[in-house]
Length: 285
Image (cartoon, rainbow, N blue to C red; front, side, top):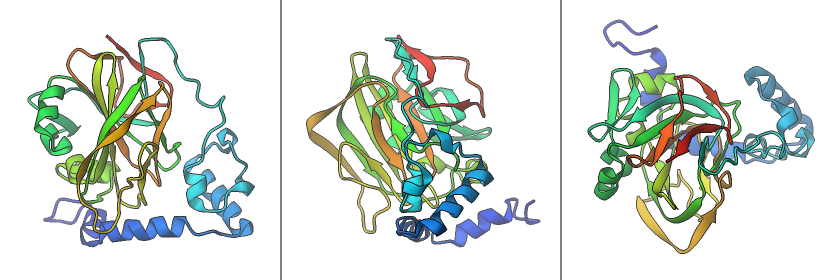
């Protein structure tokens, strides 16, 4: 459904007038409030049934959560996500749905059919735009029911990361299909991972209702009032094993994996395909 003469669904115009960043901070604040178990437990059960969350995978019992955010960012038990440990395997860093994937052509990535965006706008780094042009990318959308911790798809170390402030449009199909330049428009926190085969990047994209993006190797978080874009070099390299946790989303969003030319080969992925953290999605050349 779309308004006649406007061409976009009513929800788009509602989000257009909504103060998205402030609204998302409020959602994050509410999600952090300690709630009595007799209220929180039914809320978690309702949410899980509505979205199809598999509670049996959770490391904690639902009675152990004290806030909705604790539940949403829950850790999984060790058996829930086996990691493909084949030496050259490239694993999915998250649970989610394949949005787009392929080759970065003429410094552009595909957002959706008929919509693309510039790599330089995404990274705001000319040198890295040249580095990744002609390489591969994979976009993975995390739905509300998905596990929301983020892991490294390769073995390596983090020496540098960037945080870029921006908008907080939804990254659901509404945003994907109707918001131009969506991923380069929203705020994002990019982890650069140095490997034996060169650097690769893990871009974590903010979205409406996402309280914060957090990383394990630094105190920087997203969606902070008055924040400025920055690039930070770590004093000590943060070493990562394949599958090691990198950070988390407090409520759902999207990750974009970037690889330079000839570094990796992707398997036969499909748009809309559900992938799980630890599952092999390609191989390192």
